[in-house]
Every structure is written in C-alpha cells, then in structure tokens.
Image (cartoon, rainbow, N blue to C red; front, side):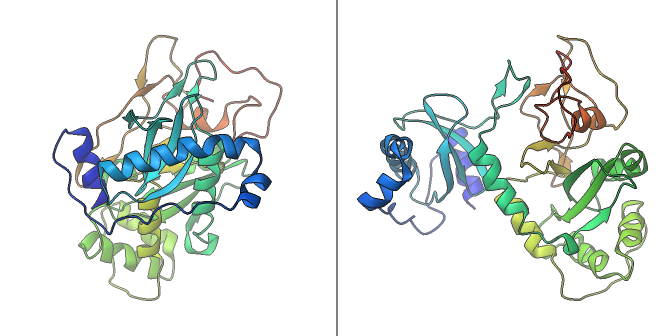
Length: 310
C-alpha cells in the first residue's frame, strides 16, 4: 500500500495514511553519537529534517534505510522498498536513479549497496534455483516469474551466460501477487524433485505439476519488495548493484551518443516503463567489463571503454 502512496506523491494526488504512523526517530545517546564520529554527528540534522519532511508528507511512510546520497546535499532513502532522494533540508524529493557521468555507471552509495547485500543474504543459497557456470567468474541474483516474456528470454540465454562464466541464481517473484495462480505454480516449481527442470519446463509454457511443501516463495517475494522490485526479471550483482532486467547476452556495444534502453521488465502483465538510458545493451558485457571499478569483475588494471557501463 505504501507504494501507492509514493506513486500518489509523484502524481500530485491527495495522500492518505496507509499504515500505522512511524514512531519518532530515537535520539542517540551522547556517548553513541561521539562513538559514531563527527561525520555521523554532522549528518544527524539532515537525517532529522528528512524524516520530519517525509512524516509530514505522509504519516504512513516508514523509512527502512537512510544514509548519505552519492552526491552532496541529499540523503538516500528507502521507503517500502522504493528508493528516494531527499535534500538535506527536507524540501526537495525525487525518485529516479542518478547516473554518474564520470564513472559511467549508476550512482550508488556504499551504504545503500550494503543495505541491499544484507537483504539478499537473507535468501539462503539452498532456497535458490541455481544454474551454475562450470568455471564461474560472476554470480547474479535474479528475481524471476515463470510467466513473463522477458524472464523466458533470459532463461533461454542461460547456456550462453554459463559459457561466459556467469552463474544465475533465481529467486521467486510472482508478480501477480500472493494467492495468484502464478504464485501457486511457482510453489509447485520450488517443491519439485528437480527444481531446475521444473522451472525450465514452466518457462517453456509447459504444465506445472501441482505440488506443495515448505517453500521460500512468499519469503523471496517479500524480500524482492523490500529491495524495490516491481518488475521481472530484476537482476542484482553481488555488491548490491541492481543491473536492471533482461538484456541479450551477446556483446553488442554501441558507440558514444547512441543510447539504448538498459533493460526490459514486465510488471503485472505489461511492459514496465523504463526510467532512463544506459550505453550498454549486453548483459555479458555489463557483468564482465574488465576494469578495476567493476564490482562484478576480478580483473584489474584494465581501462574501461569510454561508453561501457561498468
């Protein structure tokens, strides 16, 4: 429900509380503030101003994370899984992923990436459906749905991704919601004796044999919501960077100035709108750019291409 409230903010619609009011932020004891250091002490007024502004905007907003933005003058805030940027005085708010034109990559703070890593760590490896590369160099976590077309396209590329050293670890995200047929079918997949084969059959449009067991589908769906997933496939790097949605695996780079859409996702049966453009149309290239700044790459000391998303 909070997602609808957030959408209403940007649609200039009236707001109504859709959850219990958030409790006031606890004031840290002086000893704790001193231990946190001067940076934390300096950030405290900005954080208080941001929390106050969000509460006044909608008492139902419950802040899951707040930290310094990767650019000056703003706080980076997660509200019900949605990433927002609020000015330090609480006056200005926007919802969009900023892009660092110098680093040629989305601007993410280490604090936000750490927050996402902690959430992803809650999904046990054994609860994922893993398609491992024989000589894995990189691993991506993919929130998937068995019905969406782009999820099926990505799954068709599994063999090529594996050949490129990319291991794919699937988590369940039935985008039609809990209680839907999509949800029960995904439970059947996760409860199958051979989950990998069951998932492959389902993504090919085959019949899903009904099964039930103790399963992680609802938990993984809730985890995806906490991470702000609203379309599938949603792909995350090990460092917490969200890589976007479906991209073809082949390396088809484009020249500077010729932007292509970064990804395609589907949300509740339709293509989701894309917020911005990047300059790299290939998932393989995205994951395996050979430069030290790439969070997914073990190679170092190789300069990035001037138009490759690293």
